[in-house]
Image (tube, rainbow, N blue to C red; front, side, top):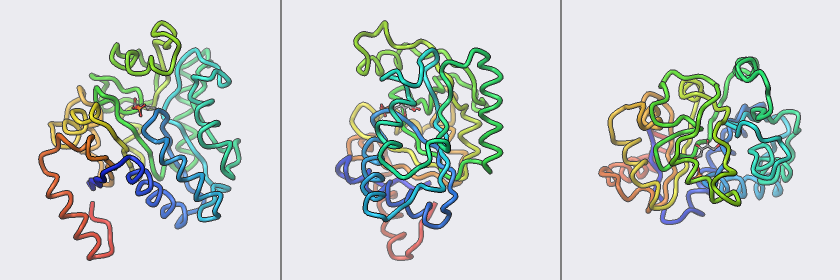
Length: 262
Ligand code: F6R
């Protein structure tokens, strides 16, 4: 595990973008797992910049998003498909046919979820999964108590998530109550994972995920089971961690060795 801490959100976004682009450079036919929400927005802005400058190309990249609200069509302004198009896909050289977001209108959602997992397998698995974290410690829409072996499925949203996400809707009653979401088990199969968190309201969840016990009550704690995770945190999100000095020491050692230490 690597924990990269910087003063500002802008700085962690730049660091995260460096990691993503370095991986795509090595493997242009990359399979990238993506998240929505406010946490990865800085990363997406940076990737757009780097793409426009010709530093990175997404022509051969395939993407799979973590989740989608159930009941929203892709052209709904609050749908995650709409979010991805407007915040990333419309601005980079990716072929939209290679961008997969769960279909929030799938009638037979069980069949759809099976099919989504199958598509990930057929693509060769996810090379790098981008994550944010909920204030209750969720990753994707794996609310507290989700099985750590869970797969892509229909999930009921927790009251805390509905409250947190109501800021994007006119009122709380408009927030969908269900979503289609990759499971914790699905996420753990990605070959590499990065998690971006900023702000004081993420500090407790981050401390529980990184330094707390492995528990389904904090689904992000399952990342402790994964051999290749990098956390990108601003100082506020890192503020409740106890081993900050150690994480900084490891980063210094990485610089000296010229290699990442997980
Ligand atoms: C979004 C997702 C969620 C968010 C999390 C944090 O695709 O999977 O787990 O990453 O709710 O959301 P923000 O970044 O808006 O604080």
